Image (cartoon, rainbow, N blue to C red; front, side, top):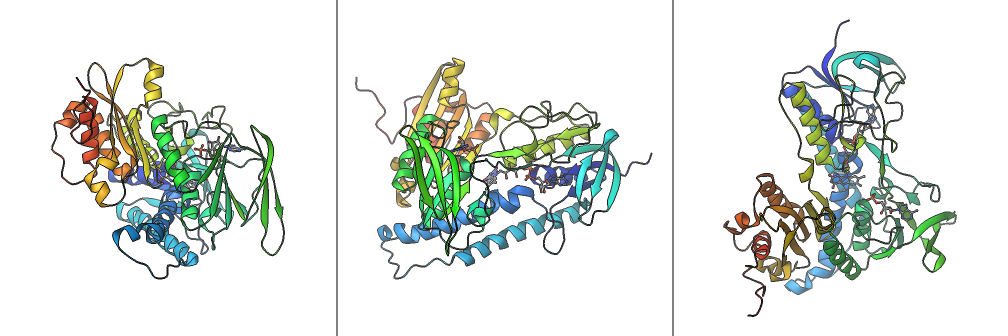
Length: 481
Ligand code: FAD
Ligand code: AMP
């Protein structure tokens, strides 16, 4: 039997396209199968992340942040804006342009690196064969030495709130509003709900977030989550915890509205919204991906079962990204793709799952790496805490952006940094500095002894590291004798 490719990747999201490029760079004959096509039937690369996830949401977060700054944040700098307007269709069109530029860029990278893009829906058959069904229904079967499954995830739908185009939407629909909803309901106070809620709240929507759990941002360090809740309340995001949505009904009219039923500790309630965004999580997408006899197994939640190196147990077949266990994050997907391909090429690659940073792109951003205080307590690990508030940072004050703090956690005995949790300006970039230090097994004192530029936001990281040992300079942290 002839083998067509060394590596065939199914799915061209950040897990799949990065794996394909890396495989080609390592000299392997590589194809990437992607089912997404545009209006002209041309393949669209980049997956959820570039098309309807990370990038478009950040484009709208950046546009709406600029608007909110101009509306509420310029006065203090002495800047007067006579008449401020937002052109929502222009904002959405800019977002589409950014997406197009990036997805087109991947097509260019495929070409430059010699990756063959195959348009169609891939299905894994027995013996590392992949059946590809094109949009016109035609089928071909390709053979590969290695197959990487990278089919990603899709939004979860819940029975109480079936989607109604333009009114009850998922995260994808929420990126396409052409006008600002007067009252916007969001189900789920997770990462995506908070980011999308922020976009439309900044533009003037009255946003109500209904969250079934009693705990706000349960996976985040709870001191940071509490600070976030205070800041979001100041931003007039109305987050209702313990509010479980039980039903919805769209009222037709010139401007349709949606009535949402939910229960909280006081009993059954209702709210009326102009639009409702359902953000209750995502699930792995495995529809028609696996033939019955291909040997790949799924767990009870539908994720493809893999080992620590993303092997499925079927020789030569791997799965990465949102399809498998672990956080649903683009950078996690990409690094898994790289690890798999390097191992196929005979390297000894592995990934440090303990150091995958996570960010919520609200303003201020919330970013974390390593263990939370709650996790350390549960594990019975003794730790020291260093905290530095941005209100004591000269750079943050100069920018009038001083909400939040850096919190660093270090081992009480060895001083090794165990976690860092930041809510504040540029938290995503700041936490990466600590992630790098942690990868090199840095102690808090190692960071404390380094020279940081002044004035820079990263001084707050330096001061938090100093604070772990009780030596921060710009806060009153010394106990009276
Ligand atoms: P995907 O990106 O989902 O890509 C899978 C690809 O496979 C798709 O193109 C799909 O069409 C294709 N495919 C599926 N089945 C087949 C098949 N059988 N044959 C051929 N092709 C197939 N993550 C972050 O890290 N940072 C963020 O800021 C962030 N923001 C987000 C905002 C939103 C609104 C959303 C929805 C997600 C966000 N995410 C973010 C999550 C991130 O998008 C995902 O973790 C990431 O895209 C997962 O990558 P993946 O390659 O596993 O899958
Ligand atoms: P995430 O998994 O981070 O995307 O967050 C999704 C959130 O939606 C979780 O915090 C869930 O508790 C919440 N959620 C799920 N179902 C409902 C529901 N019926 N009503 C309100 N919140 C929900």
